[in-house]
Image (cartoon, rainbow, N blue to C red; front, side, top):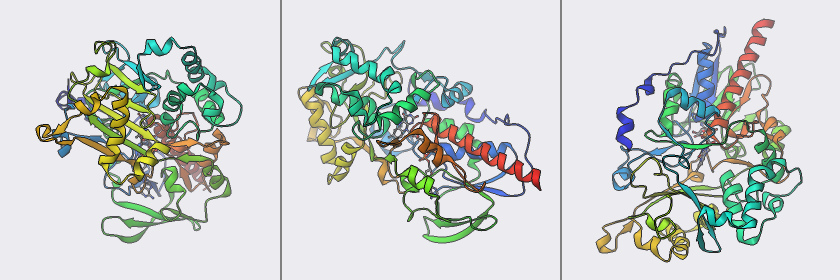
Length: 488
Ligand SMILES: Cc1cc2nc3c(=O)[nH]c(=O)nc-3n(C[C@H](O)[C@H](O)[C@H](O)COP(=O)(O)OP(=O)(O)OC[C@H]3O[C@@H](n4cnc5c(N)ncnc54)[C@H](O)[C@@H]3O)c2cc1C
């Protein structure tokens, strides 16, 4: 296994030019697209398939948005024990029959369901600073009750308050609740609205199975499937102002390299900016201003800080129970400083010494407030050392360990990405799915909205949700054009 296997295999990388979106649409205009993440690329691909001209403006210097991996060409890759692409944003695919799951199937990309054969990795739990296997946790009545709440209870919940209020679990298991239904949805259980998250979970139609790509970074799937869209992307081009008061749409484009501004005319525009960018009119402003229905919806959708930390260990048996011989760990849930430790090499690497930590919401804000990366890592190691009797610090991989050494780590702070500004959208207490419907609503058949936050099918905060939102917005653009053609 390992990364090189992927690099020699991928006939599929160039194999996909899917023209299956139906007949061409007559249109002389140009549709602008703000953002070259999964949603923006999906919009572009669909419109190109209809023969519609598109221009994608991407503020950063790369495509992919919240999809980004450490690749062999990155200098840090050679220092890591990992012999696979280490994802710094989205790392798992939800649903083998979800939008993105189906795409992966179509492209025949090698995948692993890491909790199933042949890996059979299991989740472990931290409960009151003690390390528990899945079986040990399952033996507790309060754990069983929380599991039922997670699997079916929340989806059926119609009361108010936060996820934490609705779960009403024992104090012992609050951190596990927070791992499962707080951090995993981009924040903490006391910030996320129970009603809206439950509503979203009840809308999901895929099988909810989790899996990973074995040999390729997730971005390979995007660049393969959306190859024809890539040529339409202009990097380092931030859309600062959108004026749609005239017949078309005038964009003020900031060249983020040269720090110069210019204007570009398009006839329609699809905006895929994340929620925190949309909320900040110094980053993107609209004239006329966004309608109250949207600003009101935005006030009930949160997007918190999000940090991915990659740490590696020189051995992994102390993460297994009993006596270092148990099943390989997939996740460790229940940490307070870090609610989600993921063994991202599971099923992809024979070594499996890499731990990918995802820290969202208040704990990510606390980490961001610390002065140095050393302090951030120390805070995490302190938590692990309590659970693993000091073995985390003892076995952490270092450069020049014989001289005391420095810890090898990667920290990706998503809030520091100037046109992303956080992790993923989530419903605040009092929010509902209608907020996403309002956010997605086109304005004057000229300005359209996509991006994970505008998914109305319960899959916000995911790649599938982003792609589905892009396809939905592209269909809205085509419908508007057809209507204009019919009345011309
Ligand atoms: C740490 C982390 C872990 C995650 N894990 C998973 C996971 O395991 N599975 C999963 O399915 N999902 C996961 N997600 C969520 C997933 O990554 C996102 O839902 C998805 O990638 C969002 O795609 P998008 O196109 O909506 O937005 P983005 O990927 O954010 O793309 C938006 C793009 O627009 C650009 N942009 C914004 N404003 C402007 C502007 N004014 N002008 C020009 N360009 C602009 C941005 O630079 C960005 O490139 C994770 C996210 C994070 C942060």
